Image (cartoon, rainbow, N blue to C red):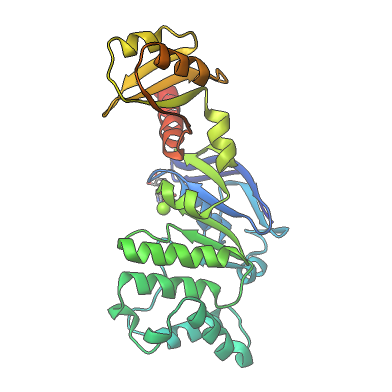
Length: 311
Ligand SMILES: Nc1ncnc2c1ncn2[C@@H]1O[C@H](COP(=O)(O)OP(=O)(O)O)[C@@H](O)[C@H]1O
Ligand SMILES: [Mg+2]
């Protein structure tokens, strides 16, 4: 559905993205994750036919974003970082205007506007002036204008940036609802957002792809060691030393309340041995459980490793 091949963009001498390649299938909800300045908006602007690439291609439903931008604009809905809202228009008039611009035919404009007003829960504010709405409502208007021509694909650039926590929850819920019937690419520099909404993630850093994988796949493939959390009732002597003496235990980190974080070699299945050690030493085993690596760990690791290479 979306095919990006060796996409590169220079702004003058500055290279914003370098040789990006990825694909997105129909119905997928993909997170485009990266720190500020990574090249997310640049990429999404190219996908949305706003910006030409310096080299490489981006195709949507078989159409080149540069050569067939009219075709593509009908099929995509774009919510840019700063939504193109007319601050002094009221919501309904603005959405009518957006529908006209997107080529919705005259007869269908009213029903298209009513549809997105319903979907984005804008009925209560449909007669209000956009500039006087809260940022959360303005973002919903932004989403509504992106969807007024009923596109198959939604491209959303940091849709929750600048919103308060309640507005963030509402917008995420709305995106989750839209995910049932759209292909969505959503950029963010916020990890929990991606884990909550997306099935797959493309991590971009300094204009290059650092990883493309499912959330589970990414966690698994990057894990070079396993972590166990061990909780004891008694803080016996030499707990740390004895745990460290086990083969395959790479490190032991004491935490609060007799909890220890153990870094172990992959597939070491140390639970039995640790339980035996706890019994023999009367440590009072309360809990022993494997910990999965969070996406945040991975993200940090990837971006730090990338930096290490360039330093
Ligand atoms: N119009 C522009 N002119 C010059 N440099 C730009 C322009 N837009 C973005 N950049 C630079 O390109 C890089 C990527 O920016 P951007 O795509 O906006 O990243 P992100 O959306 O991930 O924060 C940054 O270094 C940014 O400063
Ligand atoms: Mg951006």
